[in-house]
Image 1 (spheres, one colour):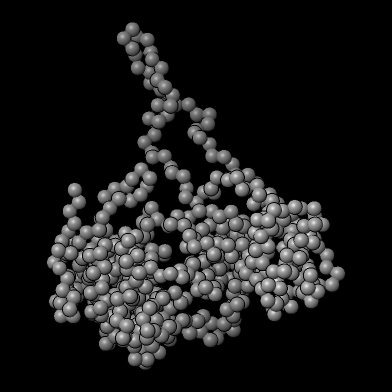
Image 2 (image 1 turned 180 degrees about the horizontal axis):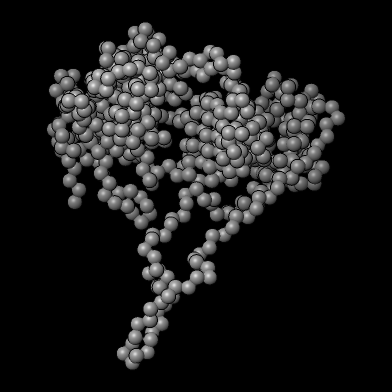
Length: 504
């Protein structure tokens, strides 16, 4: 064992993990209740007793509730082994904290640290009389290393490429999202203190602080993943953590078409819209794929153009050569040093951009965004939270009103109508799939109302017994208002892509 990493006279204590209480088994039907059954008379006047299950089924018209997607998965054959390893890991982690000089480990190499952890683990296991096979030892040493240098239990979930979101509801409940569905993970923290230590490790790495005075924080992990945490007393039942994982391999247009997010005809239309420098807003709810759609649309931008991106958390992965990335910054613990998205946008206008892409518009920066779209920076793009194209326009009006600018409603709408050309609606449907449910053009003003026309939509036709949505993409039959613009720029779209799809 490396003596320079070990404290003197270190005592190893063990704290066995309390076993969680067994969850109550859901009852299969109403207990102690009887249903009245009408007995039909036979030919001889003898009553025939109806089967009780049929009567119970006929007693209600309600559809049986499906099993929740967030329910814990059935115990597999490795459950006992995982529980055993979990208890051993807790004991060894306590031993590591008692034996390792954490201050000296900052300068230690990964190999030295792994050797040190292996040596301490071997010593403790021998003292306890615990025998592990090779696989268990390897897993245990890796988890211990993650505790010391990584993010503890979260490390394995961050490495899992099938996980898109990690949601922590207190130390003993961690949910993950796979394929649009939430599942509870078998990964847990030891207690609230353990969870707070991991949160503090994340936020301190980016110069932030979270405590009772500052109970919530936004940060970005080293791999680019978006991190949000809220701690007690604001979080009542334990700290809340949300991690939106950063995808290393961005999805392109071909990938999204292959996944069924939209059709090839819609892709051709969007290519013409981006290339001819229409101002585009991607609208949708949380987790609907707005940023993914924005990334995909940016692939249609010419490589010779200068692009500036402004985000709260840098997520966009543009492949062009000339890209300047900016990230806003919250105030420090003294309330100073804030750089808002509006500050970034004002400076971006002085940097000779061809296009400005704002990751998300949610506040007073909407004024500068609309001004940029109206003053020669055509082809700009941003995202907003809204449920439809019409709701998206209302959101823009609300943001302008909340910015403190006293502007008549007609002037406000005129500003929006002249600045925004296209609204792309992204949605996450009830079966977890993500679709581009609508593409809507803003064509101008009719009196005091912004006129809009839908070009493409996702038409739902039904639901399978497995709760999978059945539907198809179709054009509305309306010719694009920008068809002449497309043609002048060399994008002569065939007329049949605007014809409604007939499904027999």
